[in-house]
Image (cartoon, rainbow, N blue to C red; front, top):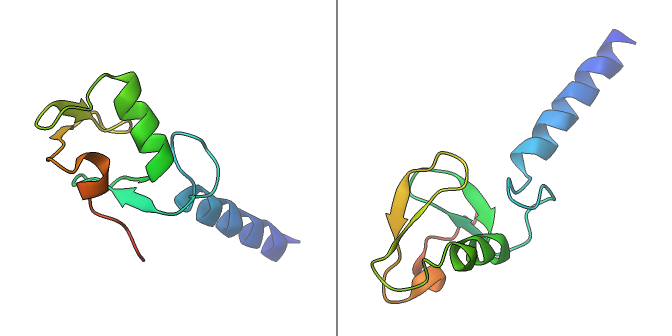
Length: 85
C-alpha cells in the first residue's frame, strides 16, 4: 500500500506540473512560456492580458504566478515563446 501512495503522489505532482495555473486544467496547446519560466495556455494568458488592459505593444503585464512584469512586442501574445516540450 505504501507503494501505491507514492505512485499517487507522483501522479498528482505530474498533473500539477502539466496544469495551467490560470484555468487549473491540463494545458491546452499552444502553451506559452513567459521569460520567468512559468507556462500558461495561450487562451488563458490572452484572457489575463486583456482583463488587465495590457494588450498594447510595449505595455507591461505581470506574470500571474510571480508578478514579474513583461512587455508585449508588436505581435502581442502571438509573439511570445511557445513551450513545445
